[in-house]
Length: 143
Image 1 (cartoon, rainbow, N blue to C red):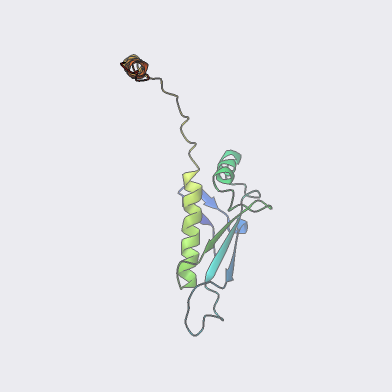
Image 2: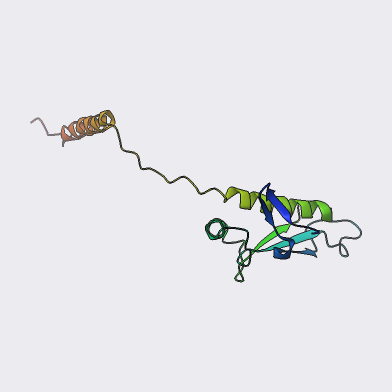
């Protein structure tokens, strides 16, 4: 990571808040599988970051609790590709997507009420069903 990570034109994550480490990727490989570190671990110091609003940080933590460590770092591991640079680009784009998705607060849910017609239909159906069950009974013997 050479410079800051751009989220959009007015927001950047400073390079000081990001750290990258390379680890061995699992899965099948070739002759040099045991010597190449192609998987990327991108750590974003979420708690220490000063560019994001605290509510955005809280939304990210709530939405991705399995990605946030005890130290308040967002940990993204990318090992989809066989190339280190492609995995680094993948990890950075995933971090950008996570932050972008939580910049705007979700719309509050407004509870809906059933219409008067649907309430009447529901009660009429219950009355009909109850009448059907009411007419059931034991079959008597005609002696």
